[in-house]
Length: 293
Ligand code: DGL
Image (cartoon, rainbow, N blue to C red; front, top):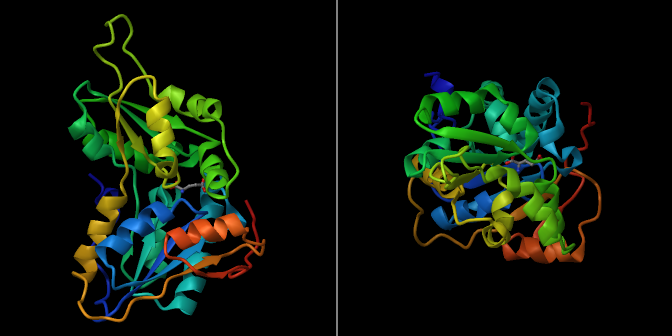
C-alpha cells in the first residue's frame, strides 16, 4: 500500500512549540467548521484560525494541477501570516490530492481529512457502502486506492454530488434548501443488490465532504432506510491531539478568528453562524489570489 494513503498519519516534520498552540484550519468554504468544532473540543486551549478559501469555492469543480498550485499558494501565504503550529486541511477534495505537494512546501505538521472508507467497511454488515463526496474526491486515484486497500470485501458506490456543498453553504447562511433537493442528492447512495431481496443493500454512508455533516440531520430524516453516516471529523481531531499532545490546563481562553480569501461581505446570518462556532473575529479579502482553473 502506498505510504501516503494514510493521510494525516505521518509524523510531524518539525517539533511543535509547547504551550498554547495556534491551529490553522482550511477549507474552501464553511464545511471545515465541522472539523474545527471537533478540534476545539480536543484542544480547548488552542487558538484556532479558520480559513475559508471562498474565492475559489467550490474546490470540487477544479482540475487537479491548478488546484494543487492554488492550495499551496493559499496555505503558504496564510502560514506566513498566522504562524500556526499545525495545519488541518479540513477538506476531502484537497486532502485526497495536495498533501504530498503541500508537505513539501510547508514545513509544519499537516493533518488531512480523507474519506473514512476503512471504518465504513469495518462497520458495514451488508457489505455495501456508499461514499458521498464532491466530483473531485470521487474521481481521485487516492480515493480508489483507499477502496482497494481497505474495502476489498465490500461493494463501494462512489457518489459525486455537484450541489450538496453549496446547499450546506446556503443553509448556514440562512437560505433554506428544500427536502426534495437534499433527497435527490442523497438518493444515489441508497443501493440494493439486484434480485437479492434487499439483503445486499447500503447500510453505511461515508460523508466524504466536510460540508455534509452540516446537513446530516436532514439526510437522516430523508433517507429511504436507516444507515450509519460516518463523519471523519472526530478522527481528525484525535490525530491533532496525538501530534500536539493533550491540552494544557490553566491557559488563558483562546481567541479564534475566521479569514475569508474572498472580498465579499459576510452576511449577518453567516456572522451569527460563525459565532456559534466561536468565531467572532472575521476578516475578508485575506488572500487575493487569482482564480485560474
Ligand atoms: N468541504 C470540501 C470537502 O471536504 C469541499 C467542498 C468544495 O467542493 O469546495 O471536500
